[in-house]
Image (cartoon, rainbow, N blue to C red; front, side, top):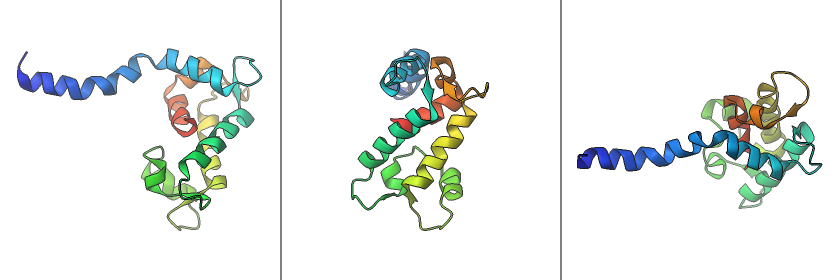
Length: 132
């Protein structure tokens, strides 16, 4: 293998590894989100996890998250849509509205809960970015 290929592989492999283990990763993370141990996550459990993450990410403790504090968890388009006051930050309510939207998108059967399979879906993976 050429040096160029080795370098490229060393850069790309860490990005692909999480995708290869996504269902197992979703299942293991599900356990940490599921305090009632029913094998699913409901909206309240997702919001509780998102709220805790919000508090951890809010390092300056001003009650808001800017793009830097969010560390890529939210796209620029999504950020702009969730920031109606256009102050360049998201308060907890605005952040939780994004969580709600992703939760609904990851719940195609509309039963109000997400199982490991739903969390491993593309919409579920986007939700997981907002919860961990």
